Image 1 (tube, rainbow over the protein chains, first blue to last red):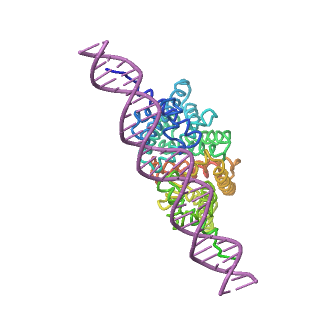
Image 2 (image 1 turned 135 degrees about the horizontal axis):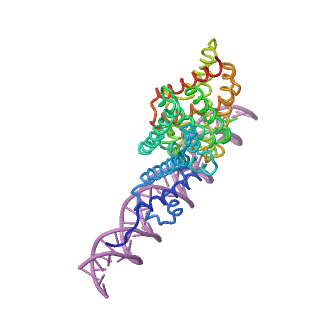
Image 3 (image 1 turned 90 degrees about the vertical axis):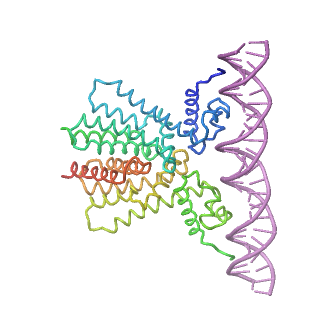
Length: 195
Length: 195
DNA sequence: TACGATGTGATGCACTTGCATCGGAACGGG
DNA sequence: CCCGTTCCGATGCAAGTGCATCACATCGTA
């Protein structure tokens, strides 16, 4: 057997470069050449890993989605002794990507969401991620409160985090204001349902 | 004085074409040539109306923003006798763009929002729109409830509508589910603050 | 060591992009 | 009537795009 290359790790490396570029210039600024340059790889290598550009974008979206989900899971595992309420608080603040160091991820995510509105392949991946988060939120809410419709509350909460993130990105809200709104919403959730 | 053309109406006509194209293929699919063809205008005319492509996009964003705001205002004026609560309900459902006939507008809006994350000029316009809506929501909430922080509630509500719209667009939520979540949130708002 | 299967990356290609240019049509004042 | 100002639309152009191609390293095997 001749030379062998770890394709998967290279794909991740390329996906990383895609995210960097998408953060800087939006998804439109992502070209095969720039991606190759950013990933310190030749264009040929990129084309071998992904037959087409869309395939590359789909993979990159899955990559960043997995990374975000993993961070949420890590955050939850980090403080397991706490109540479901604080767990949900941690999860939402993590997903909102409000911390400056996650601003890039948020921009990339938003770029993908917009593209997904006209690209079924991307929408598919996105739905998978959202469904997973929705399930997580539903479980946590059901555990922490006595609300009759945890699913609906989870839907609301997930949409709220996404909307807040968006508003921060375009500069309509300060991160603190977004966090404040989120905290307030959670507090009301506890107050209504569990007291 | 030689031949005169109503520049403003032509600009609107072009902006309309931009929206049609953005709805179909995203903002990346908006090229000067396609826009000209869609607007039944020569490319030269497009270039006379807008010096650069970005200028055209900025105008188009302002155009669609104004149209949405106008529709909200019209909806409010339509039922002036009702309470501030129903007014807010109408405004939010209008802004959520959940009705199928507004799906196109929603896609265009999302495309612009994503682009605004990396384009200060677009973000500027967007902030203006959001600020206007935030003010409207704040007034209505203050009028309908006794909440101590109408501004925060308005922020939350605006972000929620945006997030719900997004989730419907990517196919994660059915429009009915989004409306249900929105209604539930409003109901809680009344229950908490005003009763 | 010689071979051949793999992975590589420079290059080519057809195409599209945004923008600049320019001859001429259209229209109103002299 | 005619001329000058204003607008139009076709064309040109350089840059950049995604994708295909192909000679060449690179490595395990025989």
